[in-house]
Image 1 (spheres, rainbow over the protein chains, first blue to last red):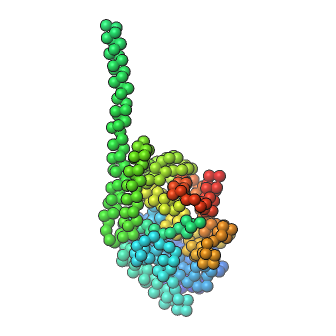
Image 2: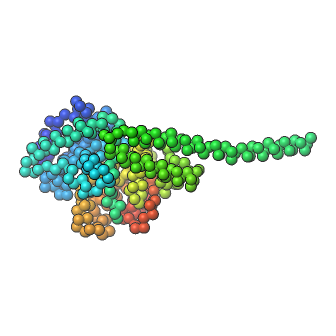
Image 3: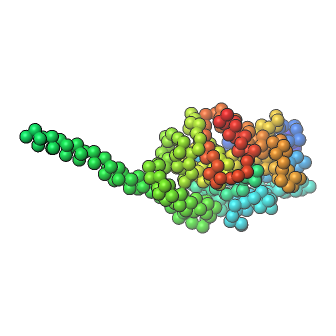
Length: 152
Length: 229
């Protein structure tokens, strides 16, 4: 397994999503193990069947890299990316791919451990703050996103 | 006497026949009321949620007003058409869902509903409407695919990989040519999804081209060819 993923696992294990939010460990998976496309997913679930999914994309990975993605998954099959949520909060209109870029949780590959800690803490604060209502009730969020397929 | 009986029989028969249209006229308002009882309170209550729910209330506010407009139009144009409702609904061609009409249908077995169409805005309006009723919905868009993993050419790809790849192609080509589109991760993931909903027993609703787009879409055409060959 990628050493970065080991570091990410170590850092995420330090966070508590249970006492305040009621989320328990669901599963973790390494995909494309020992290839350049390797990435890691870590999932938590609560009694309302809502899931919090962390994806860690290591540095030097092609296409998507050095990034943590946080996705809320609802029982109705829908999901919300935390970066999309933050972008929509700011822009309040249908979002394009470019709109979300600056709201992504990128990690600094030169200061990996501190950077992962910092971004996870930021995510944790958001989950325990303004996103709490969506995690602990039946609430769900739909963020209107431009579908690039509509252009073709 | 016989003549009187015949006249009486004629009058009774005529009265019974004339009662049918009178009943139909009464039935229409009750249909309109049933829509309000099922759809509007849900949506209206969600509009009251407040500032903290900005994201959802905002989109539903749009959907709600759109639904109202389309609802009024559908009543005027076709008062006999019913709005699909209830967990056990079986869809059929011509059904009106949130103001859009079912163009083609493949009824499924797994209780889940997938929706396709030429443009995503109607697809999302219909999807959100059915999701608000508590149905299990799946669309090929960011909201529903964000956490899915797609096996493409033997490699697991996330939605993040797929959208990033598409954006890179846009940067490279401006308008991506069809032959390049068909090799993009987006196209391949869309194909994987179309095959999945077809083989895993989803009820698949095709809205067709409700916005009358002139240009062909390689994505939508591929979905239709895969699902309704």
